[in-house]
Image (cartoon, rainbow, N blue to C red):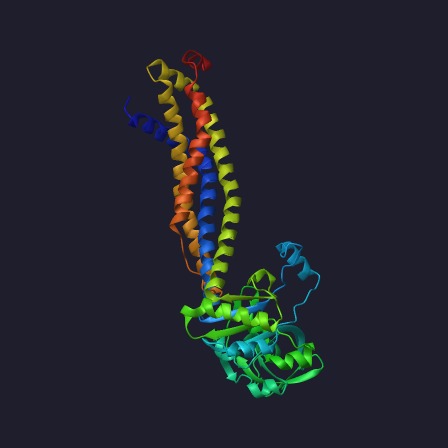
Length: 424
């Protein structure tokens, strides 16, 4: 038999049943386009978040508080740690002294401490719940932020607990709208604070919108509003990126000494702090987005299975409708293998057609998503990774083969005499 004969028969069958073919292909199109969108969105989110992290500077090391893992065996599960946080366990050992001591280490240029709180901000008849960020005066230099109007607070204002604030871009608009804010006084709780600066518009990172923040000297926030002397995190700028890992280890050793942590084995699970280089932070972001992508792909796989079941059902219908044709072809010399390949080829072609249309639709939707994201000021790149195309086509072809085998075997195993009598 001519190898092209089954292909010609399949194409003729598809042409003669356009609506049935369309409905069969639709399930594959939805599944394949979803794969492309998930992969593209995953890469877009990863680039977006990594870009935002890098906006803080690539030569920084961040240290933050964490609950040490303790159990009978010396460590605990993440569940125990999360439970402790949910029960309100606080770590109060990290202080401004840690910042100052780390500043003296080799390869460290400068650093700042940070703490956050919330308070009701009011100006005349305007009221807004505000996130307060207390930071050292060096924040403005290390964090790569810019001042749009006025200035940032100084070291002397921090030491003297001055009641001054710098407003985020959106916070200024919420309280003052189009009027001048510099030199005016806003209320935080029951106290008045003088506005000395307005930050440039920066946007959001993850769930934090820096434009909605009010910035205060860290000691002002600690003593006048929160009544504490600890901080939540530290950021240090380093000189030589090649020594980042060694500098991070030096910071861990120093903090263990400052916090009286007896940890001769240098087991980081026992520390009440965590130290991250920028490379480690970006690796964590990449891992998180990869896990999310895998989870979404598992959900998308359900769509492909549904599409595959649709192919199997339609192929069974096709076999039933073409029983007489199968009997006729067998009676003139076609064997079981010929019939099997004919119907299996039809199933695979339908799957490939669905894959091609699904890829095109997925690329189009991914492109539109990137355009919409950019309209909202997000640096969302349009990326269609090669592995998305490989996965999409592989899944669709596998669906065509797996869900086409049973109907094709049923057709191949028909008795030609019984098949010819069926329509008589």
